[in-house]
Image 1 (cartoon, helix red, strand yellow):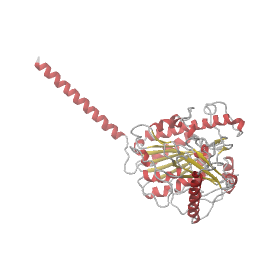
Image 2 (cartoon, one colour):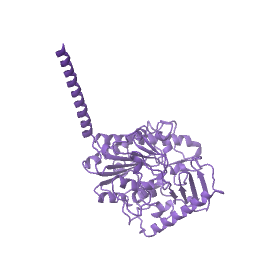
Image 3 (spheres, one colour):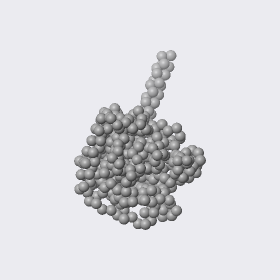
Image 4 (cartoon, rainbow, N blue to C red):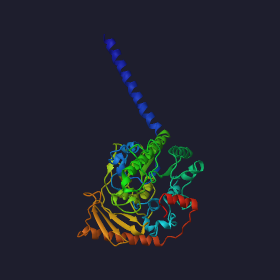
Amino acid sequence: MKNNNRAERLAILVITFLLLLASALYVLWKACSVERPDKHPNICFILIDTLRPDHLGCYGYGRQTSPRIDKIAEDGVLFTHFRTVCPWTIPTISACFLGRYPLALFKPSLLSDMPQDLPKGISTLAEILRKNGYTAIGMSDHLAINKAWGYGRGFDPFIELFLSYQAEFPSLSKGSDPGFIAGKFRETLSGVAGKNFFLYLHLVYPHDPYTPPRPYADMFGAGSQKFVPEQKDGLINMYDGEIRYTDTLVGRLFDILRQKKLLGSTYVVITSDHGEGFWEHGFCRHGNSLYPELINIPLIIYPPGGTSKGRVRVNDLASNIDIFATILDMAKIRIPSGVSGESLLRFTKPGGGEKTARYVFSENQCHEDFSQMSCQDDRFQYIYSLAKGTAELYDVRDDPGERKDLSHGMNTAEDMKEALMRHKKEADAKRAVLPDNRTAPDKETLDRLRSLGYVQ
């Protein structure tokens, strides 16, 4: 009997040992099957043009416009108060590429003064990354973000998706097919296997005209393409359809990163350049105001392997002027002097970052009648019209839609105006030392830019 008990105990010990060994081997296999971040992680920067955060599920929107982006946000860091430096594309992308506010890069101008080349005399984000051992890849489906105007500087290659797709499909009016973009994305990643890479991808959807294919065109109700207030609901239905269309593509791109076992070694940054207006303050489209529907944008940072505790929400005020410094910090590269903004990388780490008081600025210099600047802190936005000499002040905490102007009789308005004027003086001084040169667009490009509203 005792021998039987001894044999049973021995069998239990052997089985327990084998189970523990199998568990340890499984953990080791998992660790080896996912590439872990090395000293210099990869960075995939996805910019979705004209995307409002309040039309995404992860920001509280009721419609199912963004299931794949929402899923990415579940294991990422989501910024709830993220602002753009400008309510239209070219100055914003320039700020992200050069780390300076638009007014420090461009003279105030009208849309009829297009194009605005990426200013020379400053190292671009891609150039700095390449000098530090990264392969820098640019992919743009936006006609204005092109090599001819300098936006390919530092990238090798810089793939103009709209031209590649147009060669196959001459009727292209706005953007490329998602399958085409996903294929180029997969092909490009295969070409940099084993290398540290920075990949910038600029998607043109959901920029107007809103033309999502079925089933997205009527996914949220009857649509319209007429920009008149009476057709607002139909326009929003089509706009939301384009977001869902784009969301499906973003999900495919994320799947490709997973299939190539890159998610464990790659930061994925998802953001926009500006929002879109639907007459909340009397204006539609973008480029014509500094109200929240245009300057509030999303930012989601998915760190290598995801966050350790699910979605992290950051309520601190931040701006896409911080993109330049944040990406260099991700790459563990020293941030050059003269850069505006600050790194947001601390918010992706356990414990997050300490709250800091700061001002961020937005500038709208592309319409003579809407020449404005704004100063924002975590409580107020102060908007000053350079064209009219008038001011507005909004409590964005109690009045997030910015409906009640508090500018009269508040010291806050004067303090923020002083900060805004200091900012303008510093920006003007930085711009004054840059060379001024422009490249004339060909007629075909000019016509396409006019169809997107970039040329008057």
